[in-house]
Length: 233
Length: 215
Image 1 (tube, one colour):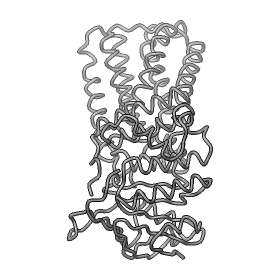
Image 2 (image 1 turned 90 degrees about the horizontal axis):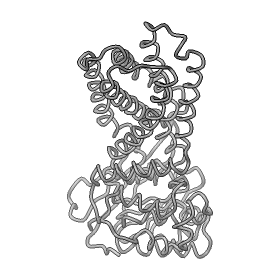
Image 3 (image 1 turned 45 degrees about the vertical axis):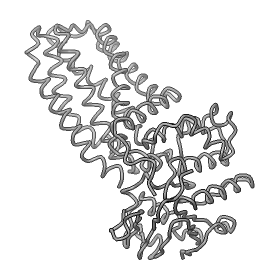
Image 4 (image 1 turned 180 degrees about the vertical axis):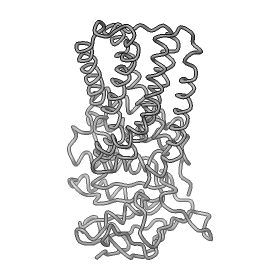
């Protein structure tokens, strides 16, 4: 007696998970609303409280870099944990466990979170630059840092969400686990963003970019190696 | 419909599970292809936990559950969690995606299970469990009645023509027409594999050939 299929290919299943996540988000808009509203509210608050004129020209690159990444970091903390927590709360996790290869679940959800955080970043960063008068001298480096930083935030948040999804105090546990995990790339991203705001040479920020590439690679690889045990146990 | 081409066996030996206190077991049984095992027992006797263990969703605390496929008479068999694509499972605490329609749900699970593309398979299956087209193609699953959702769960569990079908309270929330669908599902499963039904309802248990009672 042979089943009509064997173990599923990871990529097609991951694409199916990714598409379902986006379709569900499009219909419910729960994560989108919380991410965008949080990011927009903090941005407006920062713009009113600090604004482009209350900072000295010397302080502006550093403070703006910190504020930008604070907005992105807390947006990720607000919306990205939902991806696995909702599966457990709604009772759909068991159906997914029985049906999809574990790496495809992680990959699909990671891609969905990257897309979500990427959309928030694309929305917030231009507004931030305008409202805060944030001058970027090295745009290619800045864009590269945003891509690497956003991916790192999404990757670490997605795996941490999977880790805490079965726990009772998920909100607290997510923050406790995610903050130390996300601090190293955040520090690197802030320092690199300051470089992008003050230097015109792309090579000036390359060390930070390499640091972020290494971080993204290590965290994502570790997530895929550990996810099977996290998801199935 | 895929017909059975060989024998398979589900074997449980001193299987038990505890969460601090005993949930069920130890229990032993052996079921062959074409047979239906009924699992009876009072509320809290561990029927649902036993079926989750057989589905590979929970590890047993002691003992073992093994599935022996066609040509593996002499082998060690497979742990259920290693061959999830051969298992179908329906249970009261199983949920599908409420924001999708029934058809979108089945199509999604077709894709993640890697089933060979078959246009209309999901729709045909939903019609077979008695869901009219306006229920499965237009309304989100969360807007369907509990009984209709139970029918969608039956379609989900049989979507991939599993060798082992685990039905936990399959008749819950179903009307008489729905119960006859459960009978048809069990009759189809007899042709391709093993069915395990856990229930307190005598009408569900009457579909079984042999029975274990948990205490």
